[in-house]
Image (cartoon, one colour):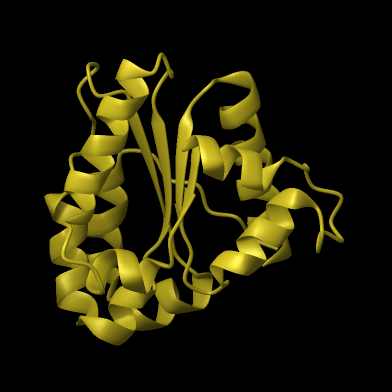
Length: 167
């Protein structure tokens, strides 16, 4: 978790402050409040970046939603919501949208088959007009234990780029 926190906190800070993007975070293994705390530096023992979370949330540049609610507890389709964010980014002069998603909620609410189906439904590359970047996070133990070798390969090939962080 410490490594993941360093990665997402640094990335979020850069996208908000340097790249003028909208960032959507969908955590599962951390609460939304913990993510806010990490990003603001309140509960940040790793020396990670500090941002004004409330300011960015108020202006709509930072959106943090529990992944269970985002994927399973809403009447709104998540991809429609992301497309809405992309249109807002474009109309407000933002440079794009980054989505950071922990997909572990699928293991517990919809199963592995639905996870694979969902991931395969996502475009490998978004068109230049939308200016959208997506990052799918998997806990190493979930990825290794819950997915078959073929499922892992299918996901890795579909995503185009992969980053494996070993602690």
